Image (cartoon, rainbow, N blue to C red; front, side):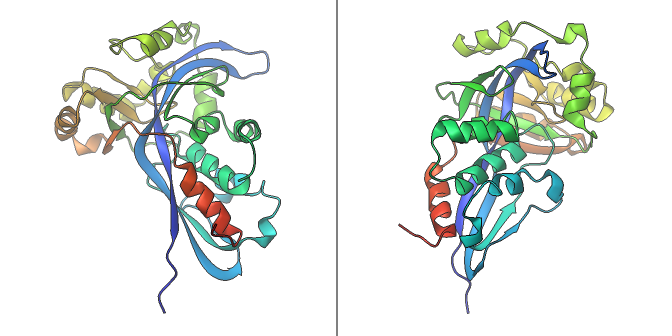
Length: 293
């Protein structure tokens, strides 16, 4: 007997097109200015009807205690009535600065709270992580300020990126990088803000974590390889360790990728993407509850 067809929804990755840390707040958090851009590298949510009570299978290699999808799904008040099985299949490398966990959490929130208004979803998302609200949409590109949860949607701007993710694990990465900030790592956010209105990208895309990341030989090597491959703008995404080069076209991106040695890390090409597909999430949320309307 064949298995029933799956319902599928996709959670996109992101890159930070510049990241400036402006100040440390009294509550211990930091004020940032960054442009978040969704890209067409996706994790896959797959649901199948089984006729039995609901089971969630978390992504391979992600411990349950740090699984943001599990935490988001736990917010559903009607989960005891769900059916079928849900699997998350990772394509976005974990803990790589590409927002995969945050994107997955945003999609899971839409499954858990399908009738929630935008303000409620945004509040729940911010409690799960600073990047999670961005992945709720409504656009695939936004200026993020405050702790990263204050979003101003931006118009789409087509671009290509060449991603290089070194084989490197930094334990407690983001917290460690924030602790390691020096006074010269802070800035006023003006470079990122100016990039929003400029017709051209600035000569350098700032990232306040870059100094610390480049102290890691694996990141330094990947970063230098992209420059040697002909890239004109290279930076890190978020807290890394992924570094990326901006490209004006697929042809330019392919050229940079071809010239980048594979020993630098996992090399991926991606282009800018739109906001996540709310309709796919809505269909899956209904199916979990035994409805197909």
